[in-house]
Length: 416
Image (cartoon, rainbow, N blue to C red; front, side):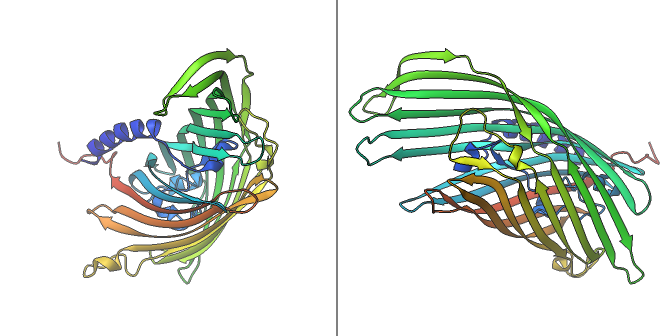
């Protein structure tokens, strides 16, 4: 049954990931866009904690955990996000529903393997400006698209305490941006369309150490490294003079395709250090520190004088609690209760102001079926940016729902 469900969900999710508009953030204009993946929804409910793992959940944040799986695990998740945007003058709202990931984890003795599909980054914004000076002009900026990622990973238990894992990723996608400007007392405006077709390979490595103590406590430690990688961006540009009818329909008066250079986009190097302690099947608390060399980031086309990048840092604190995982009398005693906090200096500076992002998370792992499957429900409240320095503050609330389904795919039949 799970195999049939997997095939159906794979087909539907692949179509949805390819077509979805994954963000409404104006900050997705910069760099590679709005980075999307914050972990499977069990990890995301702990703030995106990658150091926590168990034998029945696939941890896509830490490839060294793949070999700790004991049963085949199929995961899929989606999010609905409600955004409020504000500056010193006005407020706007937006809503997006997205597919966040689709993956399968396979236990293979001392090895573990995974493969799947997820959005890597998204671009989606609509901004209109009207200046009030003597040279008043109106402008409109829009963008859509993003980068998706197909990945495969493998891990190996070197000993009962050490494991090593790696991911190989192929990223691909299309990003389209458009800007239009109208000067005062001029009927015709100018419009520029840019399109980037992006593709390239990247990798991710991790080491995991687990130590069990005599008092049944368990310590987890992990190191992760993502080398810098380059994505090829095939670029095109079209410029035109435009006007609008009284009903708002755009009329193109003349246009021309310009030759622009193809570019290389950087996926910055990233370093992850994690540690945590807990009582297996009862509770866990951990911390992840992530350092990323975002100073090497650039923008796809335009020279943007008011925006620069610097190296970024992220801190995550989170954990879970299970009252009694094997309770027969109380369903809610078997529920996994999760919570976490995340703070990130994104490395993006606009008008000399740092753009920070932080959020609080909580969620539930709801057992279903008889083979350790779960429905993971999570909630996140966060804030990004600021209303000052002519910038925009985002306040967002997300509802996340994910399936973590388990089955024995390679069990040898005893009877025909």
